[in-house]
Length: 498
Image (cartoon, rainbow, N blue to C red):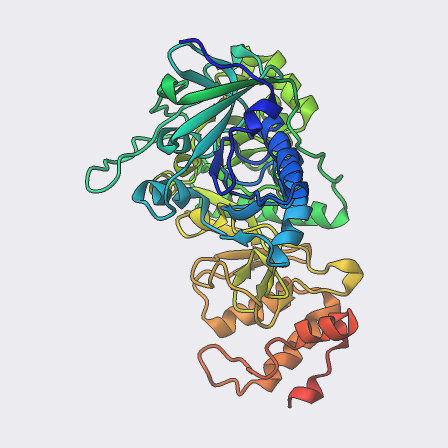
């Protein structure tokens, strides 16, 4: 079939006000870049002419600034799901300008198939190659591309020649059937492949093809500092002790890791700990530290939904594909995060908390309870179903003005029933087999920063101590109130709550 090649500006004019758009990719990897930027510019033209222009946007997770950032700054979005990390979009969401649904990443594709969100008008798919019969070779990220492409009325393909055609073989694309016809997802080891190498679509739905040469927009990680080093060391020490005690099998178990500086540091320390054998990963994002440890022979295989690596590392992977092709696989997010597979494989889940409370509840998403940071992402997919779920965070932030460990979290994403271990730079709190009162004592003694430890004990004195989960409803958010009023949680005055 002969496709209609056009510029991004021309293709942008195929998008109409009110359209529901869905994009490929997971994080900035695999997300389209040229066309979203052109749509943002088109929206600005329409606004200047006095015409309304906004789209609803579905993605795999976050995207690059060329998508979320450009569209947010152009005020071209009315709706966004399931996850974001762009500062301008975050500002628009918290200002009420964009209607945002923070969703579990593994659930969105099936909810679209179930009809929860209505129809998709246009899917925009980044590709390394496109055949005449509609075979799309995806790039460094998958996300929800298979479901989006199948459900969309129309498809626009953005061919990005930054990604070589020789990446054929990295992907494993599989879309489960819907109930009552769904069967087991036949992944019984991290290395199992169950799908196709390319995304097969009806070529008659492809209304435009845009060529581009734009790199992924994955930022560099902040260098490991003393705090992240201590957290990474504590995680590695804990897992090594669990291995030695026999709680973790001697063969070890696959690792899932969240995205970010802390997660990248933790993986580095795990890989460098010789008490831990070489291991595999079944995760969402494959980061720089994974590739580094893979080259050292410490990670033998990694399954994910994206290569969320810096440009230098991606070039290294593409330059040595013969080495990496047998060690990497990229899957749709509903497979990489699938609860059935997570529980079957027995993952060790390593995720980061924005804040946690003394009973083990975790807030992953909201600053002071009401301002969205990024979103829950896939952390819930793994936490509830892991063999062992671990959350980590620094014991203080902003020079000590904030304690991420508080009496009661201001928003709950993961309850005390799902969080098994909490680790900070101060130490390790193993919460398994402990009652709420025992968990509180364990967390305060092991995880809270010295500047806040007495404050936490003082909080417990305000409770009657007789309840199953002792709380003072008057004082539960006293640290948050002190921060809002003075800019420092340490300025809490407990006498106000006696």
